[in-house]
Image 1 (spheres, helix red, strand yellow):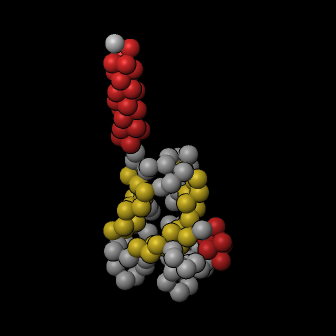
Image 2: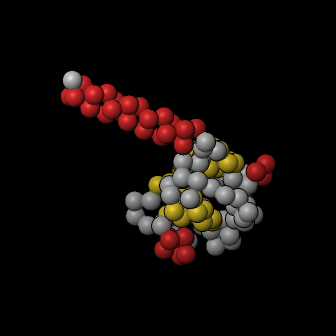
Length: 124
């Protein structure tokens, strides 16, 4: 009988864990980078005043071929260069899920990042 009770507790704990994880995911938000203007040379300051959480999604909208989005590390952000293995998005309608910590993005079209087309997003 004691063994059955332990199994019931384990199942209950697993169900509770699933509910908690689902609740956290359900609270994720989708943010359109640059709002109506989209991902442009002037959207670098767009994130100021916003609070992001791990699991939130950034939607990068831009004219395909005009820009791209590259997820980089801190060094790539500072130097406006994409380290080997960086993920590049180029559809013009890119969805990127934020990880906990600082997430760095640049446009790797020549001159764009240097002109300010980059952002660092901190997700709690």
